[in-house]
Image 1 (cartoon, rainbow, N blue to C red):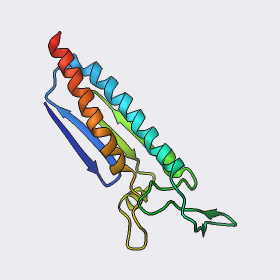
Image 2 (image 1 turned 45 degrees about the vertical axis):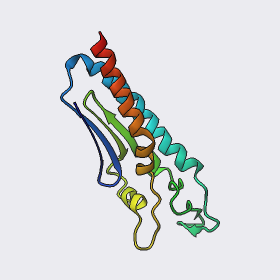
Image 3 (image 1 turned 90 degrees about the vertical axis):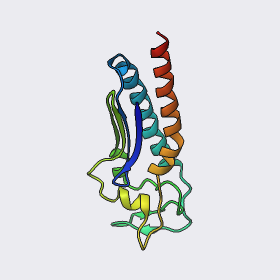
Length: 146
């Protein structure tokens, strides 16, 4: 079995499995579904609870935005980014990230020449990938014991 981890397009986590038996499919689907939902919620909580900067800037008519501090999860502005954080899973893969409707997700993750990075995918990956791998290995051990 190969467990491959990668970040695609700077704003999507992908975990893929290759060469596993059919009898493990349901357990792996459960694991990927569980962790996909947990990772999505972790990102959204991080955005909601991120420390805000002491400055603001104007966004539209009479509306101001207080950004997050550089290096912290991005602050929620109009919920567009939050609504596009989704996950897809099967027995062979889990993808968690920002869908195509929000092209600025990659700029938040990596920063630009005028804006510091506010990563949210890499910290999530760092926090969850070891747990996902351990759960997968435990499921495989249980299957082998049977």
